[in-house]
Amino acid sequence: MNNGLVNAIIAYIMWGVLPLYWKLFNDVPAGEILSHRVVWSFVFMAVLVAIQHRWSDMKRIAANRSQLLSLTASGLLIAANWLIFIWAVNNGHVVETSLGYYLNPLFNVLLAVVFLREKPNRGQWLAIAIAGAAVLLIAVNYGRFPWIAISLAASFGLYGLAKKKTRQEASVGLLSETAVVLPIALIYWIYLAATGESTAWTLSWPMVTGLLLSGAVTALPLLFFARAAARMPLTTLGFVQYIGPTIMLILSVFVFKETVSPVLLTGFALIWTALAVYAASSVRGAKLAKAG
Image (cartoon, rainbow, N blue to C red):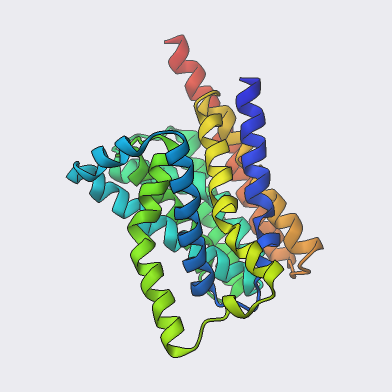
């Protein structure tokens, strides 16, 4: 349990400070950054899977059509999530990315209702209603629908749903997902080279080296998370999850100097209230189920 908690804290701290890393490449278009993230994640994970002697697992996946379809879906969804996140960070929307990951566990409840036919208890429905009111309030304050937050929550939630259908070991699963979108990334590289629009390779060598490390930056928190999930209760892991978006929110205000209006703060307060209601209700439900 203690080892799992340490792994979870490390994973969510790493995810929380990721905006600082992507901000280093502010002059590189989000699509180009994404292509590098995909390519170097694939390279990093290929080396790791080779060290673990798990290439036979990759062969089994390739021979299983249903798993291939699920991994294709999860690969496309996580790539979309990465693209939205990178674009949002480099265009001054870190507050909204934080909101997206606060909303994610509540969005997961809706997905469970729609796709898995699960039945939330009253407290969880109340949490969803409060979160919905918060999103509406924030949309009115923005003068637009908070599409970045909703897209991040939706893509990561659907990614988790697709992952439930595969249940692969973390390193093999991530290698498979990056392999799905690797051809798209390489074709995009060829297009950039042919049109002379490539930006990344014109950066200084320290910056290029930093971009090459995007594979490790992507994979390491996912691997820490997988170790945590195997060693601790899901309810406890859910509480630790909020470390990430909280760090993002702090960075957005004190480092990136984004404006947070009183209405936006009220919206966040409603989200935090919804999360508290959701967590308390989930813990109570787990205790009742254990007692029964």
